Length: 185
Image: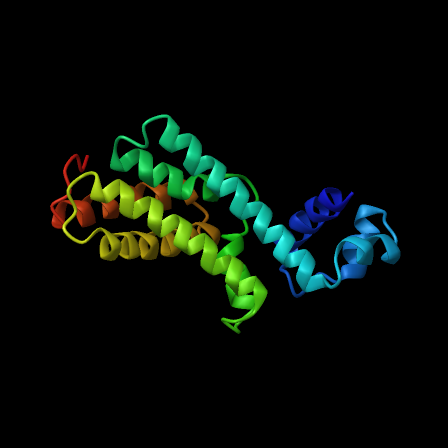
């Protein structure tokens, strides 16, 4: 039942923004009572944390699956993985970037999940570039995350997200080549 509430909330948050969606609106759309909601979530913020933790678990699974398959082999594959979502219909931006914009306090539980996501991503990227000979993999991973963040925002704003994905691949190639990373395609 709590998963069903989170699923409905995720769709509403993606479409309208987190702050614009009340707990009552989630409950109405999900067909549950306030008693049921508060049995699972002590507050709307707890629901937002559960939503982002679900997104984080999904990303972790994608990264684990990619690592088990030998990891991405080319910068084109990395760029595709970083921007896969923005090429889907009705893309509304990165849920973590959106949440960070709506919760400015870095100590807020929502922002802690955002931080966990960024740590997971930069760690995975640092491992990928380290294996390809990057001299400063942590710095390069931060730079790649900046490219990713910009591309996701551009993908949300653009009428051509596929073009943004291609431009990200080109920018990523240039950044990796400048850093001396092997196998920059």
